[in-house]
Amino acid sequence: MLLRRLRAVGRLGRVVVHILHGVWVAWREFDGASAAHRCARIQWWSAKLLALLGMRLQPMGRFQLGPQLVVANHVSWLDITAVHAVCPQARFVSKSDVKAWPVLGWLIGAAGTLFIERENKRDALRVVHQSAQALREGDTVAVFPEGTTSDGHHLLPFHANLLQAAVATGTPLQPLALRFSDPDHAVSPAAAYIGDMTLAESLWTIVCTEGLVVHIDILPQQPVDGLDRRALGEAVRTQIAAALGVSADSAAH
Image 1 (cartoon, rainbow, N blue to C red):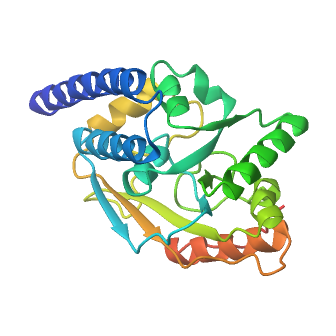
Image 2 (image 1 turned 135 degrees about the vertical axis):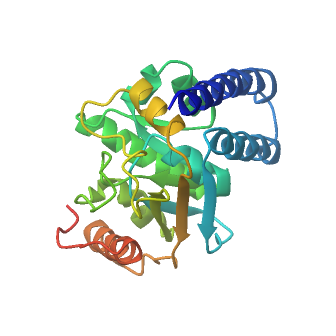
């Protein structure tokens, strides 16, 4: 037990150093940098953070070229990092609370994240317009349409309003199925960031857990094909649920 705690403390120390190094890199290099350089640094930093946390990344499938709206289920605060390790060009839409996270909030913003006040309908409309403009310019935008994290054993209903950006621009949706496992659990409880858990508590749980694997299934793209946002939400939710092996009874709304 003592050895395990010492290992976790050492792991945590290396993670803190890496996060601070990420701040230095973003502050020193991102202003005026090319998109290719930014993506390379984001991918390197994200993959290394997962490795320092003791996680193994296991992607399946390949991303298509061109603008796309990435749609994923949401389990952990590490979901953004995991996706950036395989798709560093993704600009995430994230709740505004994330900006208040010490250090990490600034880093997530530096990666091009679009922040949204979930309870403000006018702000949601603003983010939809910003997302649509980014897609028109050839960017990849990523959303978590559940709106919050789950324990990984089921999918919450999808809020389809953010999918309107894809409808407005005719951009295909790229569904991803995210799952964390460990040697004792096909769906690890260690990575789930739910309830009243703090970021510090979640981080400590993760560094204390051995053998964590983050699985990313890159599923077939869903073209818009004249569908409205609710129909698209139901279609990609069904895809993600099937990949995770969970029920998709609740519809998008």
